[in-house]
Image (cartoon, rainbow, N blue to C red):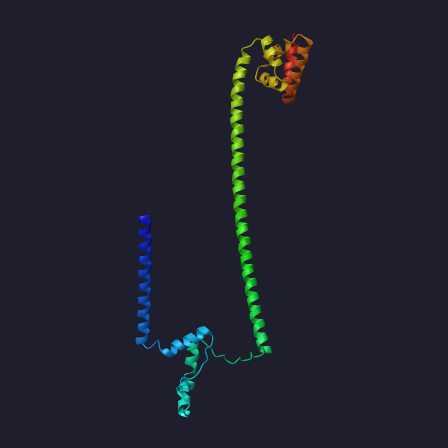
Amino acid sequence: MTAIRGWIRQGYDLAAVFSMLNLLALAGVAAYLVVGGHLTPERVRQVVEVMRGTAVAAPEEGLAGDGAGAEGAEPATDDAPAAAESTGVIAEEPIVAARPRTSSDLTQTSLIEREIALRERNRFEVEINQRLALSESIMLQITTRLDELNARRAAFEKAKQEEAGVKDEEGFRKELEVFNSLKPTQAFDYLIRKDADQAARLLMEMDTRTVAKILESAKSAEHKAKADEILSAIRKVAPARAAEVAGEAQTP
């Protein structure tokens, strides 16, 4: 509790010192105004009247007495604006009637408005043309880019097909090598598991006599039907070769 009371007393002391400093500052300002002639009893009275709302602009000579003549009236007239200024009263200026607008003024205004509208339209047209040019440039870039992508895609597809063709050809050659090593009966059993076009492709790479022996190895009706289907597939791509195979098969 003693500490709290000490803090409160210190706060009061600081507030008192601060108040004294403010009073000294105000006294110094007032002294400066009095010495400089800026603060006089008359001006204090006028300020008080302004704050009360009872200020009346009056010439200083009128307060001195009734014996002032015409010579004393002139300073009062000259000091009237200063008194009004000090009391915050602003003299009203006479209102000057606006000059009526003539046809010339209306024509000039119309021309100005027309010029403004014309410039605004030109600015709008320039802006539209710039935007159209930008749009066309963007569309051209997009079209060029799409053409490049399509060309790359076509090249990729072509390379892919060529690679697949190479791999297919390599696989076919290996398959043909194994197929040539088979006996006619084994070769026909191998052809049965393929479709007619694939079988015809293998047989087209062999000599006519060997092809005839392979087809002649078909004994059952189902195998003979498969042999006829393979021979028909050969006839579609090489009719002369099919005729040679058929003739070789009929030769005893």
